[in-house]
Length: 294
Image 1: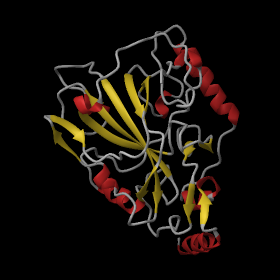
Image 2: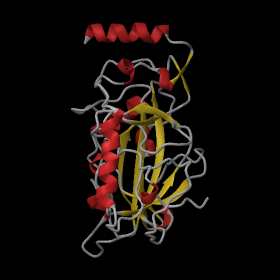
Image 3: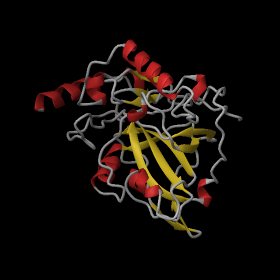
């Protein structure tokens, strides 16, 4: 581990003052590196998804490229109310963005075929100081950990049910209503080694506002959200359709977050989130996509 830290320090010293996030070596972006699966693996997963959803009545799916506004899925459902009129039920995050578009258009790669080391990352520039490595792993799991330069997509999940925030999607339901309307506000962040960057704990503060559970400190300078009808995400749906109907609000711009604050949040939060989730393959089949009206 000591030799690894020396290597990372030397590598960082050689970086130019501003570095494109896509040019950051994998050894800096993550301690856990795996050989990416072949394109054929993802192609076969998409074929299985198409086969398993064909004529089964599944609604539009997520994630998607928010730049693509066309879709052919005919299953319609009423859009959920704005988040301000619903209850925050869960917060969780994925390593790398599940959606593509806006300022997160750089394809990381196919990953391991199980949702890890795939997805999209911030396509902008970071300084060598922002990419300075840490001595400790951040939010570690068996699959990966976080490092400066990594991108995460955070999902702020809202429910029309009368609930309080808690772990997993189960917190969005109660005994009185098993089919609440769901809305997800998606915000993409890039992690930097900078104490002056946004604090993840503050961003994720939540409490009651106007009688409803709310995320209280979300960024207001990350662009106008792209709204569309979709589903829940995650790699468990790479080959199966998600049955959950979700109204999505995806912000197109990326905010910088102090990576140390992410590590602190992972150590203690009511959502029992201590590591990043994997990503679902980008849904590209027009038959599984809704039309984006804006």
